[in-house]
Image (cartoon, rainbow, N blue to C red):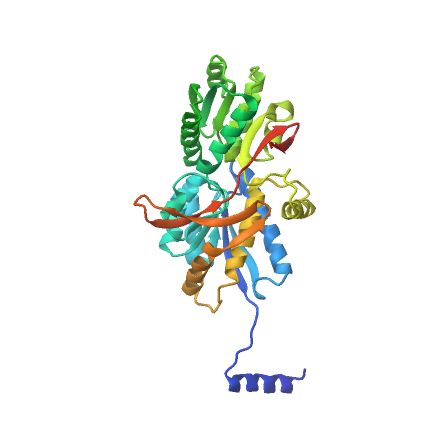
Length: 384
């Protein structure tokens, strides 16, 4: 088209009161632990987001607008998560924030997003109480309160468990929440506890606790741990001749267990999650194949949940009019998200509204069905 014709077209559009549509970037904050011990989750989370965004952008983006991540390393630390949230929300002016990786960090940083009326969407936070912070807090990671009782009941039925020992991290929101939910589930199932032992993040020697546990002769060990400590715990238990099953929480549901506890050391770990690499639905098969092709390695639960989260958010983003009014865009996204339903790698998903301590409506949790898996010879196998 000649310059003269372009000018004429522009004049006609201006005269008619119309505007020329153009694509823009939709900036989304990604606050994940990309260094430190929690990076074993954070890198999987980032991969899931990147894969989903590349698919969405390749299919035309959000009404022609391209998703662009502003990614910051919150290092799995509370103070750093707070700083990253402030940067993403107030300096980078993202429309929403995904993250942070750990529940500890979410408890500290999510109030920043709530106060700024900016959606924060957690994909790996499962501790109790996070969504009670406020109505801009979302997560598609199913809580320990919902999953752990199912995991325990399945293991009890399959293994004939009569008594267990409990081992948990006592200095982390997630692992303490896991312990509280395990304790309640054990009481509900009337499973006696032979002993309860604790450890701290960063510990590397667990032989004292495991030796005490060994002396009580449990049928299984209930473990609420992050993978950085959980892997070595399983290795040291097997070295001491403790070959009973481990029943773990969300923090233990990672393919990293096969690296941290190689060979037979990782066998007989029972975990629950809406996602399993052994689940052969069309949506999950497509995700696994695409992930392997892009990253040359198998995905884990954390990649699957972030992958689905990006697609869930995309459905809501399609309801937002991007006019440059950031406050209005953030509000529109918050209003659109609760109604989204999605069937993806983690199965059928919808939000349910949580309540705060006063019993008033607050943020949004996930409604999904847990799949129980057990590790055998370097794989997670679904227990029917």
